[in-house]
Length: 292
Image 1 (cartoon, rainbow, N blue to C red):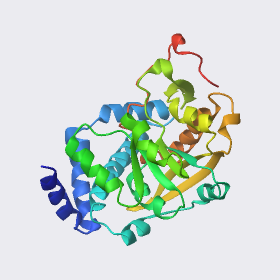
Image 2: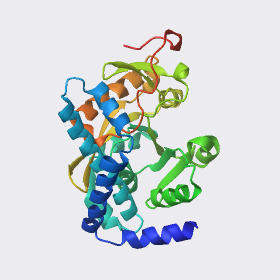
Image 3: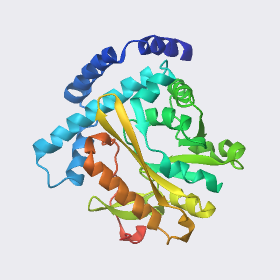
């Protein structure tokens, strides 16, 4: 069954991107106006994040988000057959914050969010930097699409590390100079084992794992996000957050990341995955203090 799905999508991926965007436009109309995929969640998230905006302004952001969401899906199909020139033309960036660390002989940890188009960044960045690129991901329940995404994500030097099998997958690279990418804006599964941090004016749980790993190995940490100057084109931005995170107080690195994430989301809100239930949990005293 995998080969049937792969073959169909491969043929579809051969179409010019301008035609694929017509499909994206049609899918946008379907999921926004008819299916209304997670529309309640999206508008609820936007109301929390931007209470100062009017409802029409939030609806405008929601529509732009859904267009980006559909474009990302269609662009990812294109990645099945696209060549290196396509990738390099569509994604540019400044990698100095990462490359400046390499001569020190140290590995690097990257913190980013669900910021469009992270799949394209994964295919381009490894071709421009000196590190072994390791990407931590959550395997999909659907085995066919999990295999398909593994194929796409490993086309250009990235190595996937399953979060469900981290120790074994990471073992071959532990003695190399690596960059490990973590999507750190995921909702923690256990709110009583999280850093609670003000985020868009509301106590919000953040995963402890990224900071804990960075401090344990004292890995330099770089924060990244992407912007979209026009349809189909993306720019990567990176900033060195901490050269020695082991010297920081507990929770400080995650506070810095939350502040960075809020800043970039506010600047270009349509670029974030608003269908993700970021405020799934409400803070309770038994969860511990809110770090301010």
